[in-house]
Length: 389
Ligand code: HMG
Image (cartoon, rainbow, N blue to C red):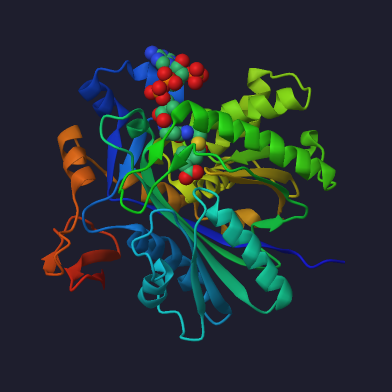
């Protein structure tokens, strides 16, 4: 019998601030129905000047270390597409902030919003090689589009940390995976830009193309039948996208697209994304957290995952929820991470959006805006300085 490997613990973090879509709609004269119903978003997380992918990642990971210790963790994989350095892995700062031992392998992975799924799958491979080890997988991103662009309504920020190991307490990840790669320019960010470039309609089409491609490969690899799944966790750049994707998949497979059936397959996966916004590579796992936190008992039930990263790479795979999983959830902490955010007005959000460090190599402190356990205190000689509270 093959060993059971999967997600043993899962913890989320998001930013200090939040902008309600009502404020954005009021500023740009959009009917709020377009945001609330058309794209399915209520609000978006906005990072403070003294937080970034590292502080969110450390905030998500610290409770996992507090619960499980660090003795078995020999690898930290940090998935992100909003990297803070072209050479040094952001995970090394996290390694230091959460006190992992020096005998740890740390690496950063990138492929748009797909990165965390690659990290999870690579982690499973490492654990299969040595079942005594655990891998800390962290997905952390700040999603940023240009001000006054159509993408502005689909920004957000968050981190998800997952402990991957044998005999997981939450979800056992299964073979096979359905894979799909296509060279498309739907969304990208050249090194010299701080905001992403996107062709919105092209990106939606590319995502739907990838849904078909991964499902076709998943079926050919001998995966489960569609009706076996209790719920579907899709990558959610905006929550309506999950509905578009699932409707497309049902159509492609020749099934009816009954609204209630779709809502029951997806509804509980969107609760966190709808108020956090696009968190890029963390998004699909925020969907999983919301589902596990809210659903009636899912013990023994298979879940489907569709991870899409523009450019593009996608993967369809499944996981089965483990007996007793509810005793290991972090529902209260997850809800608290969301509810503790302070609402900012549109002008403040705009200022934060444009905030950046001078690039002169001098000493530059950040304003103290955050109240969380970790903060980015400043930059000195081009080096980022983090603080633990
Ligand atoms: P847009 O042009 O502002 O909006 O762009 P729209 O005109 O397409 O309207 C959006 C929806 O709202 C439409 O519904 C409208 O009918 C509806 P749909 O036809 O799609 O079902 N609508 C209304 N509904 C109710 N009441 C109203 C109303 N008005 C309009 N009054 C777009 C929207 C998402 C394209 C834009 O925000 C964008 O470019 N976002 C960024 C790109 C993106 O999120 N793409 C998703 C797929 S790619 C992906 O997931 C990867 C990604 O995460 C990056 C990565 O991998 O790293 C992005």
